Length: 54
Image 1 (cartoon, rainbow, N blue to C red):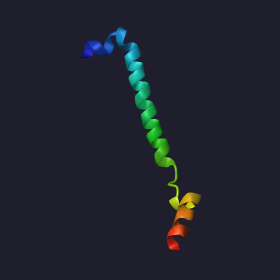
Image 2 (cartoon, rainbow, N blue to C red):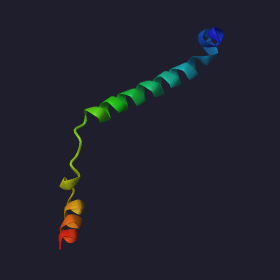
Image 3 (cartoon, rainbow, N blue to C red):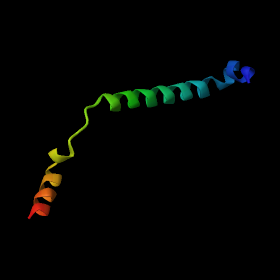
């Protein structure tokens, strides 16, 4: 197992795995920091709610 980690033939594979992991973690952090959007701000939702009230 350790020999595979240190083998230079697998360098590209390790770089790809690290890149994918960092990208996923960064995306997760970015999405968690975004404020939640109020669904009632959507004009289609407002129109549908107005139709349902009538």
